[in-house]
Length: 483
Ligand SMILES: [Zn+2]
Image (cartoon, rainbow, N blue to C red; front, side, top):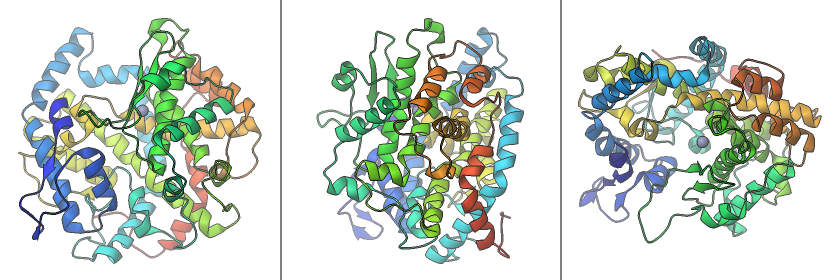
């Protein structure tokens, strides 16, 4: 399944959408199809890519996935679990974990519904009501992302206040001639400004920062701990744009964690829980995204902090990235837990997937699906057997971490403008948690960092609060939810 995913290509025929084939060769998922989904505003072209990717990689996995489920369960039972899903959940060492994440989602859902209703209305305006139903789930191919998991790429369609600055510094990065290496250097400087570790010399020599020309590689960004001195590395096909600037910070956050807990016993050289590992770099990114920091590194001239309109624009962009992701972050493993438990059977796999997509995200397939399709397999983490709920956890707790570090710095202003760059106090707090690795239950690590022992959605809701009010006002008297 991993090989099917990595070798997956979508090729246009002799003609494409009725035109002779000119710009399309065979497209890989990264960067070709990803860029197409982000940038195309042609609903037919988007549908072609959406369907093509699922035909290329989902369908061929359909008959393999039940075998994978059975084998995984055999292995899990041999480890003393009742099924593979239970084995994954064991990492969270908490019998209430599922109840807790369901509770977190319930507290975030009202805000998600507001964003969903607003975005859907703007999509109706853009594509017309024959493409998008004003009262229905949103078709999955129009949201700027192959999996409709993050919607920030269609910010241009939904921008609340056009012309008031959206803080996308991609053009500035390109104009200033930034390279992948610049992006890695800037990320490293942020961590060292907090008094944390600098990436060692071997990191710079042995990481793969750009796509090599002479061979095919898997471009899915990842970080690696070789458990040997300070040998940590990143593998990614970095492109010069703002999204990849955040991805570089994300991956370097993993490496920072590896370095911080390297003196622990080998068994404890791991995140407090998998969500913690994903949250380290993202926590830093919440500072990197601020106007004050982008200004500091020369990517933003004006400070936008005093204008309501630009603040709303900024928070909308953030919500399209971080808030909108949460239902997807939850449902991928909800589906797999059901499959591992045998609550859904192979013939129902795809229908069950779309039931969850509709229930949690308010998304539907743009064209009818059949039991021969296997759309979950079109997602990297399903194809490669990588657990996913860690990202849901991360997207909640990174705001808890951000708030805790901003408090440590003594920051007084609104949470979304807080930037912890250079704060040794914030760095000390961060380090004391990171050094623990997995040597203590994650609740203890959480307490060291935030003073709380539980996951909490309040810092996320506090961060987005100005947008919440704006959306309630904007959606007044309009249809919210889906039928
Ligand atoms: Zn990661």
